[in-house]
Image (cartoon, rainbow over all chains, first blue to last red):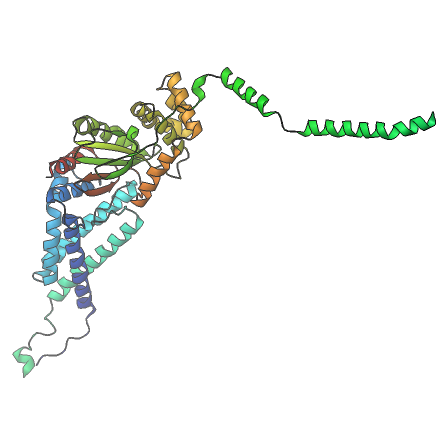
Length: 169
Length: 245
């Protein structure tokens, strides 16, 4: 007989992480492609604009900036959907955590260098400041917790899984 | 005898009183207008005629839907498919970097070929003590056709004049004495201040939150970008905008 799931803070955080991070990733990818406009500008213009924002961090080479600019928005949407669906959660949660970690490191570096640039995270022009650092730090923390807890919970049987024959008797 | 003296005394007193009153009134009256005008005229005649501010037009134009453009601070063909506005502050280091490393190349490769109409907008920031003065001199120089050399001089020598406030000396270094007199007259007369204020207001409605901020206009859309830009990356974006049908 199935039992109701006991209170499990790890699973709650996993759910919160999945919903919040998936939503942010999907919106961020969509915003980069459409630039928040309707009708959206030509894809080349939108990705070209995003490439300018990526290169403004002064981390990647021109080729790498172009690669990131042309792939990241689509990757964000795909990863967000996969996280939302929950299929192979540990893999996508790990990947998202690494990506957010990369964003956070870039933002901290740019902030420390005093670069007067846009965050480039969403469609709306957003100066990179202390709030950006705090926000990305909070998202990274959530992503790390979600991923770690996903691995921990994966080792245990699901609370709603059917009882084993030994438990039934 | 005594009677005649007594009779004349009031008359003499009244006359004296009248004289004193008239004299006081004459001394207290404002100077004669005619004589003042003469003095002014004389003063004008003595000084060189070029201290008077030259007559300049403060009319603005609209290009591709972008309003309030000062044509003396804009470059390129008005039929260009892309209009780029650059809001900058002469005392801003990032603006200097953009101007010296990127804007010049855009001028050579896109403005001169009719692809981009480039507009310089002044956005002096309050924390920069001399940026407003620099903007005034730059604007005045633009109105006598010397925009580029003065902007170049101001950005190239930014560290010098921001340390000692000698904007005038920096500008004078690239202008002839006659040109400098015209520029100085325009700055002193504050004729062009409304144009700088207009640029500032336009930036605030965008809103411009930092300098430099570039706004790209193409096919009825505008794309504001804050921060400095490398030419290599900007080039690709401009090509995309120009290629739009």
